[in-house]
Length: 138
Image (cartoon, rainbow, N blue to C red; front, side, top):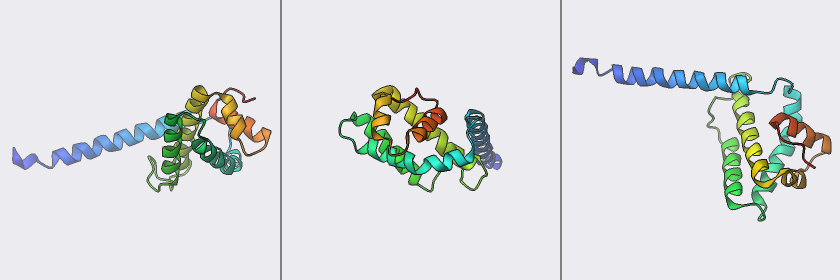
């Protein structure tokens, strides 16, 4: 009985690897097809400023501000669901999680909240809405 103790850590390790692979495949399948890496890079500074402005707005409900602050901490953290050195998928988890949070914020606070706090151009906001599959902000 005690001679097979090593099976437990090996089984747990195999389960974690399978879970990680399932997450990687899911993230790859959920990424938008019509958005290129250049689009993402152009939107990055404005999106980070948008998240910061939304998190700092006292008019936003507390739960939204807490989730946005958590997202900013997650994005700044070197610990990721998928390491950033893995091509495409490394940054895809950050993009997909950010898109999911922005969709939730839009459902909770309305698309006008994004439009009010968007620091970039109207075309940039339209591209962000397309990337996150959000309703068009006014």
